[in-house]
Amino acid sequence: MTRSARPTTRSPRGPQQNRSDRPGRGAQQSRGGAQPARRRPAAPQGDFETPVSTTPALPPVASFADLDMPAALLSTLTREGVTEPFPIQGATLPNSLTGRDVLGRGRTGSGKTLAFGLALLARTAGRRAEPGRPLALVLVPTRELAQQVTDSLSPYAGAVNLRLATVVGGMSIGRQAQTLARGAEVLVATPGRLADLIQRGDCKLGDVRITVLDEADQMADMGFLPQVTRLLDQVDPEGQRMLFSATLDRNVDRLVRRFLSDPVTHSVDASVGAVVTMDHHLLHVDETDKKDTVTRIAARDGRVIMFVDTKRGADRLVKKLLSEGVRAAALHGGKSQPQRNRTLDLFRTEQVTALIATNVAARGIHIDGLDLVVNVDPPMDHKDYLHRGGRTARAGESGTVVTLVLPEQRREMSRMMVTAKISPNVVTVGPDHPELVRITGAQAPSGVPVVIPPAVPAQATPRKRGGGSGSGAGTGAAGGAAAAAGSRGSRGTRSSRGGRGRGRGEGSSVAYSSSSSSSSSSSGSSGSSRSSASGSSSRSSSGAGGSGRGGYGRGGNGGTGAGAGSGRGGRGGNGGGGARQRRTSS
Image 1 (cartoon, rainbow, N blue to C red):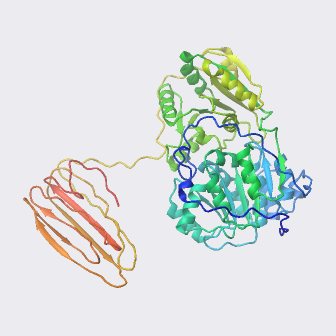
Image 2: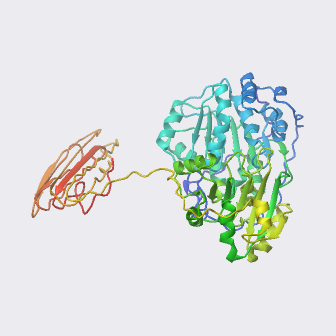
Image 3: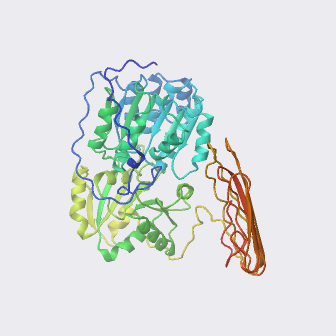
């Protein structure tokens, strides 16, 4: 399945931009695709102009068996219970398997992941990547979507002996670099973390011949366009590009016209992705009734995702629901990635029944059997509405989307529904209204407070009174023409009351032309201190006496250093003393 020559020439690489072009303060976007803060409604972008293809598209297929794919992929589809292609898969796979660029628009849950994933794996099978040089790349806007794509493609990648790596923010970049160094044919990444790895020299994209942009519209909305453009400029210019999105607007149009060549275009649903198996309800509520209404919905039998505007709002609502007996947990950008993963696991296993989320969960979260999504705070625009609602009615299932609307929000929500081409059911309700019960299954909560175990238990550090000891160690390394700056030893624990403290530090450096060592000593009013060094400068100190201060080591300038301190009695020292024990670091 070789790729034919491109009929057109790609646009030349634009001017290189510095790293300040990554999403800035205005977007409130952290590296690795974390949740942006609530933004103002986007300005109208205009209609998306579908590119005109000069090459006729191949006809769709009704069966995976009709596709030119490795037998291992076909057998894995059967084993995974995927018996026939969804419309977007049947329409795009015949073309993408031949190497054509693809522009696909379909709502979340329409089967986009396998639509691009099967073609990517089939065309990469049999090749082997060099360390740090992947052969295929999938760019996604969020960590959650990266994990979903990885989970979906892993059994198929394994079937054709392809190594799959995932790099996202919020996780150890060192471990991700090690994974790339071992070699991975397929890389799933968020733009920020991938850019970091490239800058560190841990990844190069020159061998990437198949590139996928999933949820391209969200990457544009989150301010990733300059970063995505720089990444796409680094892949093989004659490679295949596939762009999939739930909505298409002018921002996506810029990517399409620059990076896709004569693409085959397929759109599953209507122009914005409304779903016939999804019921939409606007529930008009008064401000005084809203909290009780939300609590009763959350107390329903079955799971529900509730969307709110802010992280603080999510945490407040979770606290209230827990006090009322509802097993609730928050999912937002203020949580670490392990915490977010743990929370989703609790929700999937129904140990948590009400997931209170900001837009961090609006894309990339797939929960089987979820039949209700509630917008506690209405979204800012129709695209956010569609992606929030896309958590339900996935893969042909049915679902319900409910939006609670205060009197002052009614006009804006009506306009949003017109833009989204959705005709919702509109009804005024209160906490005990029969229609609220019929639509959402709302019921009174138990009123018995519940506690959900923390997603990631914190390390408990006991406090010591009346003596103790502390230690700290740090290393620093660098090479240079003479000696580069090393790192400072970590600060140790602090304990109250003691008699004396000690500290040691040692360091060394390698210099191409010289090395040095020095020592000095000084005394204080109630103790003495010494320092010595090897290499460039490594220091340690110890004190003895009623108020001696334990020291902490400092790494050598351009070498390695370690420091340790302990203190007992008296006042203790830095690395061994203080008013109370705080922490131990290494």
